[in-house]
Length: 146
Image (cartoon, rainbow, N blue to C red; front, side, top):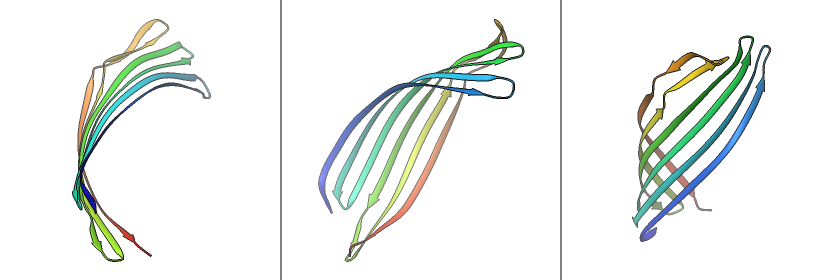
């Protein structure tokens, strides 16, 4: 059992990367930069624990490729926001501990407008879009003391 208590924390990440690929008729390269900020908190009361987390992430991606028509390129940004809550209760059954938990998560994913260009002219575009997800999870975890 865990005594009554509260735990909070935060994390921050940032990075960048690139990738290159070659195919039969073209080559593609991608450069990206991202950052993410997360906050979390947990409340423990005897065998019960409640955990919440909040995250915001952003990604800037630049893609270029070559084709028979010339260089193709695009620059697009996306963001992700999610919030989760998990509840768990631990049952001490002597030599076996059983800890069922249930969780709920909301996610919002958004992609900004972008245009695809080839040889200096626009050949396509995308109007911003977003998606919302709600997911639920449950698990029964057991541990045996030998």
